[in-house]
Amino acid sequence: MRSKKIDPILDKYLLFTPGPVNVAASLRHAIGKEDICHREPDFDNLLTSIEQKLLTLFEIKKRNRYRAVVITGSGTAANEAILSSVVGNGSILILSNGEFGERLHKTSVIHNKRTHLLQQPWGMPFDTDQIATYLAAHKIDVIAMVHHETCSGMLNPLAVIGGLARAHGAIFVVDGVSSVGAEVIDMAGCNIAFCSSSSSKAIGSYPGLSFVIGRKKQFKKLKFHVAKTTYLNLATFYGFLKQHGQTPNTPAVPLFFALEQALTNILTEGVANRFARIRARADQLRLGMRKLNLEFVLDEATMCTILTTVKVPPSISVRDLRDRLREKSIIIYEGKGCFAGKVFQVGNIGELSDRDIQFFLSTLRDVLLKLQAEAADVVAPIRTKAVIPSIVARAMPTRAKVRS
Ligand SMILES: *Cc1c(COP(=O)(O)O)cnc(C)c1O
Image (cartoon, helix red, strand yellow):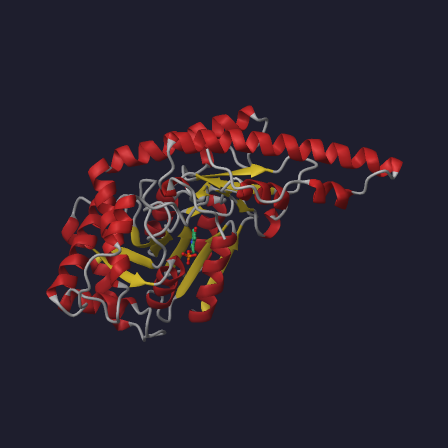
C-alpha cells in the first residue's frame, strides 16, 4: 500500500513511460461526468465532438474526405480492426523493424492468408530500395507500417513508404499508436488510407479507447469485403457512424468523456505548441541524461519525441535500476525482446512538469551512482570472502517513499 501524504497531489507515481501517462486533473473530472445513454443524442454529440477534434489534431484540410471511428479497446484493437477489415482476399506487406511491427505481422497472419513480411533488426531503419524491389516483384494491395516503433524509439518514414505505395497501386495503413498527439502525421501528403491510435499515449488520456482515422473513399469500400471479425469490423463501425452517429456496440462512455477532454486540452494549447512542448521535454531529458554519460540506442535525428531508449551502463542491472527508481515513485520501462537487459526506456508524455523532469534526472543520477558503488563493493569483498552479494543487497534500504 502507498502511504498517504499530507499533500495527496504529490502522492503519485511519475510515469516516465510511453503510456500509460499521468493524466491532467481536468480528465479526472471529465471521466466522472453524468450517466448518459449511448443510444441518445447526448452520445451522438460526444462522438461527433471527438471525431471533429481528431480531424483538427491531424490538421486535415479537406475535412469532408476523412472520418474517424472510435473503438472501445486499447491500441491493439484499432490495429486489428484495420488488419482484419481492409485486406479482404488481397495481399498485404508488413514492414517491421521492431516489436510492434512484429505484432502487426502476427495479427495479419491470423486474418490474411496472403501476408508478406519484410523485416529489419530492431532499431534498424528500413531499406527503401529493398522495399521498392519487393513491390515491383509482388502484387501487394496493402502496405502496413508502424510510424513510431516504440520498442526502439525510431520514427519510420511515412512520406517515403506512402510514395512507394502510391507508385505500386497499394493502399498504405499506419500504426500511429505511439506517435499521434506528438508527431505530425500528414494523412493526405503521405498517402495514408487508415491510421490507428489510442487514447493513452501521446494524446494523454486514460487507457481503453482507440480509433481509426481514414479516407471516406476507403471506408466506403470496406463493405465489399467478407467480415473476418464481429467486434472489430471497420465496415460496421463506419456504417453505424454514418447512419446513427454512434458505435455498433456498447461504448465505454466515461472514457469517451475523458478522451474528449484530452483532445480539448490539446486543441486549447494548439497542436503545434503541443508538439513543440513535447519535443522540448525530450530535449531536456536527453541533455540531462547525456550529462550523466548515458548513451542512447539511436541517433537523435531518427528518434520520436515521446521517448528515449537508453543503454544500461556496464555493471548495472536494469531490473535494479527500475526497482530503485520505483522506490522514488518513478516508473520507467525495461527493454523487451532482443533489448532485454540492455536498455531502459524513458518516456516524456503526459502531465510531467519541468520540476518532475529535474526530479527524475537528479534521482536517476543518485540511483546510478549508488548502484555503481554497490557493484564495485560487491566485486572486492567476494575476493576476500568477507561479504557475499546477497548481504549487500539485503543491507539496502527497502522501498522508501520519497517524493520531491
Ligand atoms: C502501445 C502500442 C501498441 C499497442 O497498444 P495497446 O494499447 O497496448 O493495445 C501498438 N503499437 C504501438 C506502436 C504501440 O506503441
